[in-house]
Image 1 (cartoon, rainbow, N blue to C red):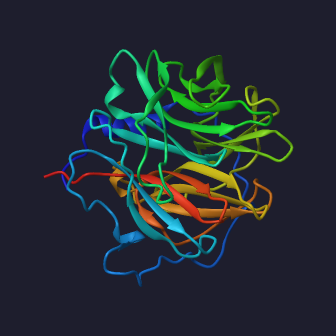
Image 2: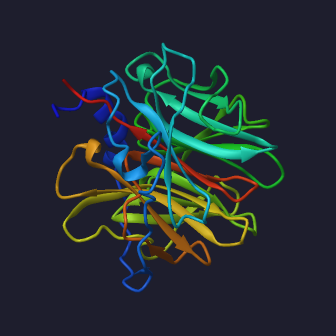
Length: 319
């Protein structure tokens, strides 16, 4: 594979270059357990998740999706999301289930380097979770940002957290209905980058950020954050990074997190793989050792029937 196009690298790596306020490493907060397995006994018309790496030869990134119907024990590659918007290059997905709809936000990679960086909102049209309505602009940002993550706060409003390369930190934007977002003043934290937001049962918001591993900051109002001690998920020995945490509270009352791991010392995001971690309290996490799929920037959602879906960035081949 040839070198990755520069703008792709900017989207998926520049968030890691924001100035980091490093926290102390707690050694007793992360454990490992039995491996999550990938279903390799699939019909010939499908592809196992781990084998679904860059297989299309398309000229731009795609948003792939894997699904689990057994609580995350096995995963099946389902296909690529279709947004019916050929002028857009969707990356950095963020998905949530809201009001009976599967809503997905993504950054248009083509908008970076332009006057405005734009992330879009779109909705799945059927149960496959692969066909989506024409995307609508949710935020136009005067500058450059990446890695937006959208959650719904207690009481109804939606908040997006994103890495602003213009402001030099994580900023937020708020929407009453999840359609159009307005930028909130100031940066919410400079303690890391690539935010993944979790709304806790008591209404507080915990952001998982890329710092010395995956660390966290906590807020009572979703705007003013303070760092929490320790490391939620450390960088495994010999690996380049762990980042792009996307946590959820499951219907069973436990927590799951999708995140990416890049092994070795490469800076190429094409080498990223998606992993899963679990937690009883949303603070201390148990990592699952087996990669689920080769891809980057995962986002996790649970459907009302308890199926789990992970959407992620899959990369094209370079000729």
